[in-house]
Image (cartoon, rainbow, N blue to C red; front, side):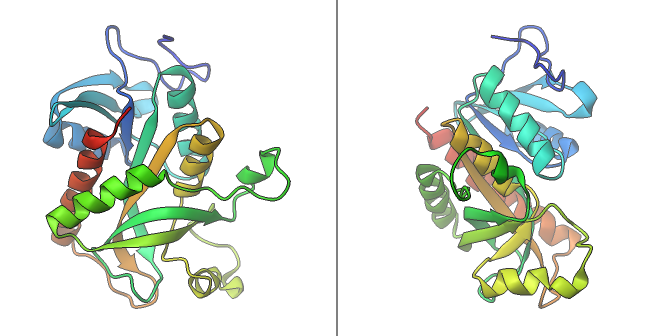
Length: 245
């Protein structure tokens, strides 16, 4: 196995490795928090560019956690290299999203079944038409079962992955159009993750906490964010532990 990636963005510490399944929050410090609070015997495996990654165990299953950065180009780079050079078979994104659907509320856990996007990344695929980036169904099913066991309310549906956090043309009313076409939330990474997994025959799922609602103005307090984050993490970790890889 290679110990470093061609981009030099990942370089394994001597004697370390990635697990077959990797959880990916956007913030590398959140990856550190997850490793220290949820994994048993976590070991730092990468710190290039401070994109921290750890490998440990959860319920007897080896799991890694690594930051992805923000946006499709960043998560696309890291998951491509994890899939191609480090033996990773599945990635679970754990992050936040802005709700837009009428049936989505703050603190809900959203399981992203698919992801539309305004990114041109799908245009590079040699396929007539456009790719439809989609989650791995078995992972989605296991996540729903784990959420039900915890009594956590989940929403399941399509998210809108945008290259823009601050959309340059407010008159375009992108959020209104996304809502009108059945999207439940907006975020910036899921389509990139699903795309890279699909074209490489790998598996992926995006599990998101609704931190605020764009149309109602609802938003989680700091304490509520922490509680809901714990719920999301338990779902993600149990999904990882129950996967057959």
